[in-house]
Image 1 (spheres, one colour):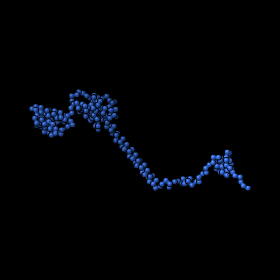
Image 2 (cartoon, helix red, strand yellow):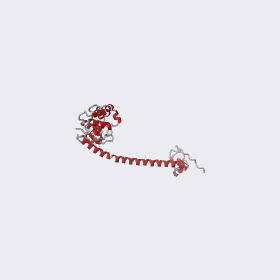
Image 3 (cartoon, helix red, strand yellow):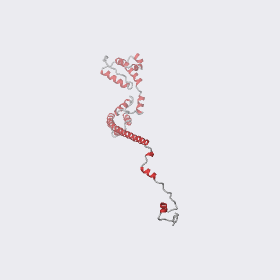
Image 4 (cartoon, helix red, strand yellow):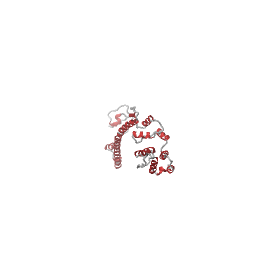
Length: 254
């Protein structure tokens, strides 16, 4: 015996996951004990958004005598669900983990497994692990666990521990960047002050006393290569002479 009149609220349609949306609706039908084909058909037509129904206008306008609900469901799935070929291609071409936890990423991969394909757990396991962070891969490589659900829980724990350390590393890096910025600012300020002082005190005004003393000394005599050391230094006052020397001392007059 069928029960036809029970209140059911049809949720907004999930264009990204039509099959899962129908499972949700059918769960409500089951809770409400709705089994009549025409009642389920009318609930869908009455609660579905207009753009979706436009894709099924022929069935809505002229439904078959039997199997109304299944015909409408299949049409919606044909229009909005990816084909098995496309889902398998998406799975094998390398899905990216993005910001998902490992367990969430695994569920996304399992969702892409076509319904007409047999057990793919071994393939899924390999594809899934390949896309995980390297440190998580390293930990999972140490276990021989084949149960995907248990592996996902383990991967989540490793992922949470490793990602928790990232903020402290980033904080340290930020602190170092701040110190470097402050040092660069101080160097720039010192350079500015030096340039300002150079403009106020030109080079000729900044000579040291020793430089002025050196500049005031009389120029040294040019040495004669034919004279000895003593005559080059003392000339006529020299008391010694080291030959060979060509210095000519004129005789003194009486």
